[in-house]
Length: 184
Image 1 (tube, rainbow, N blue to C red):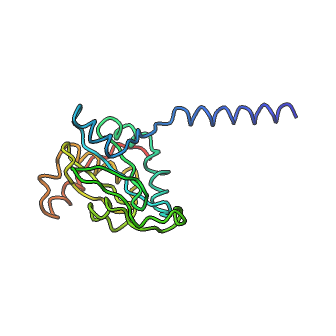
Image 2 (cartoon, one colour; image 1 turned 90 degrees about the vertical axis):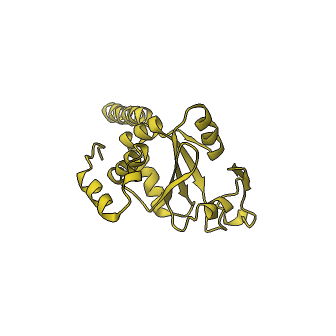
Image 3 (cartoon, one colour; image 1 turned 180 degrees about the horizontal axis):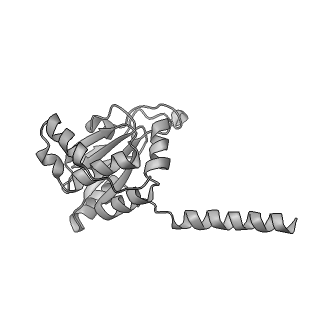
């Protein structure tokens, strides 16, 4: 009996220790990210999600919890989480965005679209919106992405490689030649 308790205690401590050292993304609001850009210019990676979206939850669990992804994002981007059907009031680019048709009774289900999600023309969830150092749209990346798939886009936008990939053929060459380093 004492042996079982000892083993359970060791497993619990190992689990707590593992979670304590796991890399986490430092999420901020869009307003905070824009303010931070003024002090230290970095691009913004904005995770546009909804509460009911299964692939959004997979992106959080499988990709954003990945140690390599989190470390790279924290070093090179300001990371923003944005609920595309939430009720937050957001000031961005001199405009105020809200969700005037938000229904609190539908908070965990499909709700009305936030004005900011319309501004970025978000039509699928999740969508990861990349903004440059001046908070201008670079690209909305639609759908669930694995850590390896995210690595390609995180590094491409960070290095501004996307500016030379003006055709599908050039992107395909870039994709084929890309050296993946993130671990699953």
